[in-house]
Image 1 (tube, rainbow, N blue to C red):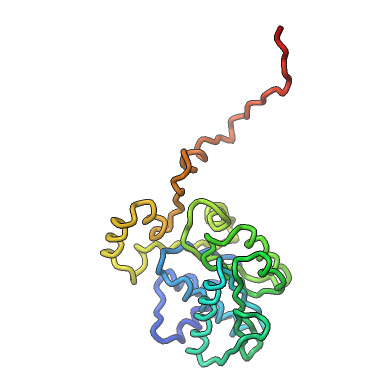
Image 2 (image 1 turned 180 degrees about the vertical axis):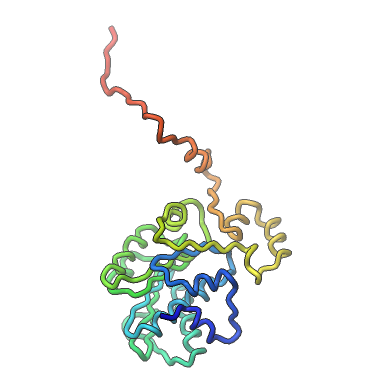
Length: 249
């Protein structure tokens, strides 16, 4: 089966760079994209969504994000891609953020609200956009939608501290996850002079997070997380404290 790169090749004016090509040509069942701001993750994600909807008639593609606005923007980009490909679409008549293709496939956008993300099943492809800012309970509510159809899952984001499921997957996800890191220094569309300006304006910690794909502590903790993690040694037997209380006379 052709990858989403074949769909991207049909778009005028879009020439994917090396890392975008790696994502688009992947057939990974689970994927995580850790990328700089302005890398084009929503564009790449929308091409992936459109490719799945076009090549698998009757399939359901679900896009989740922290808000209605962000989900609507993602689905709007999907509509633009479909329009450029000459595919006429409309809403599905049931969901406010939705696209129905002539082949009966649907692309549906969901906000990051627990009560509204439930109720879908047999999802073929799920994309979680701005995943570092989606609450963990939403992620847990979304995953069961993949159970029946054995659907694929991609999470896309710029880091937002060492917290949440996005960081957990990146740091501890197993071999089933394809991990793609796309810092600004490897993005040919972002000039080095702009990055130097941003480094000076934003400060080193924020710059590393927004542009270098690093998971940076918020700075509110008295001791950095990595210092605490290095303090643990699995070979040291923990001290067992007695619960017995002695009374001294």
